[in-house]
Length: 266
Ligand code: NAD
Image (tube, rainbow, N blue to C red; front, side, top):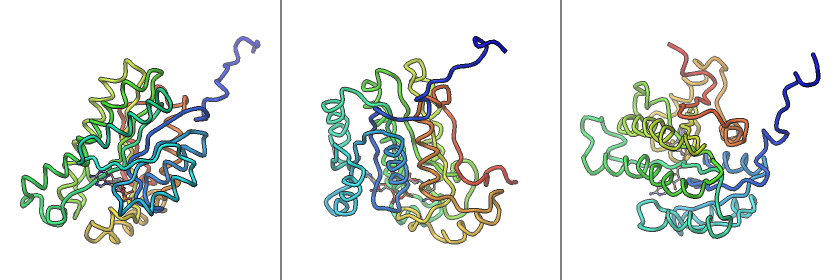
């Protein structure tokens, strides 16, 4: 083989050195968004982090300090202007961004715990707005800041695709989220902006504590997944961060399962 036959790879293909990104959805150290933020930072990125409100701030602030985030702002996607303010701050500080992660979900308790059949119109709409349409709004704000391409992530779950007892109203909401990922991948692909749905296996977090019989889900995941191992926020974080590197530049529109292979089982 002559020297000209040897493929040359970008030495920074697996790095986020010099990259900037927005991470939405850290509530505490159990949050999947924290695992992702820590991994983005580990690979060299600078971060803009957010907290839901004053009650959540004391739990998220030490994380923002640990990850040396130069931008730390409140962001309740139901509050007019807060999401926009995060992206304005990113533009002012950095001029542009390279990735954005949405790790947010909410459904009113009555709707989450009841059958889909009984879900209220208002509860369904609120779950859809916070857990899905705010992702579309985030992508809209990210687009003009990604002049050199980028990666946008949503956090989904297997209940989008198959019926998972007790996931209830979140099933159709996550299905809409995964479908939105595909349409946004189509719309943003020409700008080298990739869009991904990350689908982790069950992890004990605050959001997960709202799902009835969650322990059963964990037990089933461990027993049935080919890897027979529960996924951690570190596993989700590093796999997600890898997709934000140049190595992932032609991967888009997928639902990427980080679930020990659970989803392939019949
Ligand atoms: P978490 O409770 O740590 O994170 C949920 C986040 O949503 C919190 O930071 C909360 O503040 C935020 N949020 C809720 N309403 C909001 C609003 N109006 N505005 C802004 N933020 C709001 O729990 P998590 O499990 O890390 O959840 C993160 C994402 O991962 C969610 O989309 C969830 O559906 C998804 N997910 C979780 C699991 C799991 O087993 N934990 C599995 C697959 C997917």
